[in-house]
Image (cartoon, rainbow, N blue to C red; front, side, top):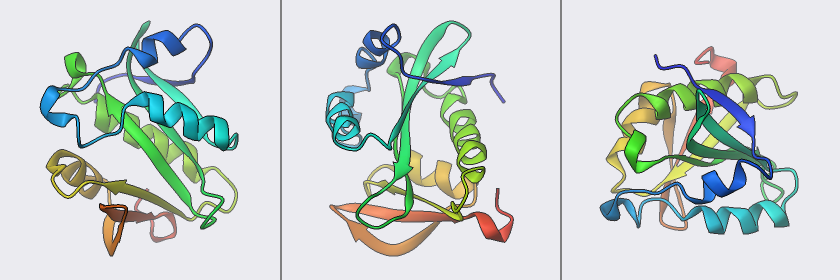
Length: 151
């Protein structure tokens, strides 16, 4: 697995995070980072992380406890177009799971992804997430049960 670090987004790293891009055909699969900034400002409990490979920002992640349902969610996991298909997404998701599993009371982790986002579906499934059968705002919802040993 590739070597990455998750670091809180800082004033210094934020411009790099804002410049991360997706392939044109991925535009509808993941919301632009700009929208996640507004969510973050509205919910200060959400944690924003830059995904680093060495000194380079290769992606962005955001997680937190949703105040509406009380569940822990990975709200964002995106890898820059120039760094996709190199294992950064899976490495980042593994580290996010490890990080979130240490939060007291975080027994389940939820994610949402568009039905046509086959890459996200395969990635989450490979790490033990299971679809719940629910949809929210046009996204499939998947959950990882940390109590079952699927960490």
